Image (cartoon, rainbow, N blue to C red; front, side):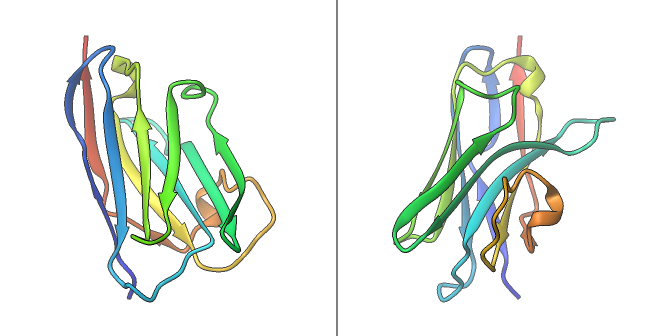
Amino acid sequence: QVQLVESGGGLVQAGGSLRLSCATSERTFRSTAMGWFRQAPGKEREFVAAIHWGGGSVYYVGYGDSVKGRFTISRDNAKNTAYLQMNSLKPEDTAVYYCAARETDYTGTYSSSYDYDYWGQGTQVTVSS
């Protein structure tokens, strides 16, 4: 069973930065896309960012409207790890952040939780005002 392990969450002041990492437990597992979602208390899970690649090239990168221009998703193929660089953080960014991975190729925006096969356990991000 493939597991995704997130790290990098924590407490930061508004305007600060954090970088989240998502590593896969199986070295032989190769995903075609990875995404980040978040869920704040009492709210639905929200799409944050996604990256789709193949053949050494990135096919697609997408972001939720609330994080465009502030967050950047990337991937290190050699480490089988995805990252979410979060800058200019706001208190409304406070949530549990989840990474997700898709195993098979798919033409889409990867903005739905149904697009993914595997999920991490989540990491808490708290932004103080």
